[in-house]
Length: 136
Image 1: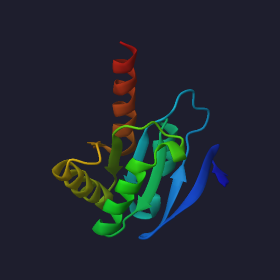
Image 2: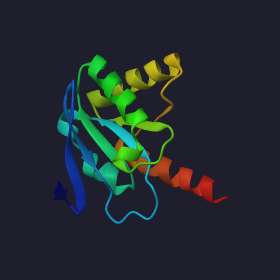
Image 3: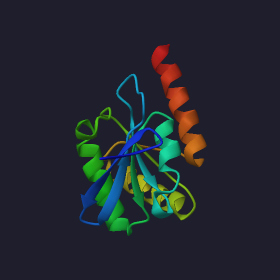
């Protein structure tokens, strides 16, 4: 397992290829799980810095992206993430893929997902809002 910017990073081998898992540094609680689509996983470190476990999937074909979501939703604890809706987001062409994968999950009724727009900044806002709601 490697470290980048104080974050642990590991490869996750899937049928569709290789994804990278980024864990946040210095976390206090169990973090949410983000499935991140962007060219070469760009921006994954910034997303993890928001306090999430991030699976940086690159830009796989839709069937591989869908399979990765289903695996991630079934195994959040094995990654140290909180069970619950998987946050799905992306940047550039990855944002469109994220929207397709999220739409598929909603149409199928599983796995539970929250689509987050706005790249890393959108995820930071989403996580801050979720934390505030949990504290109320």
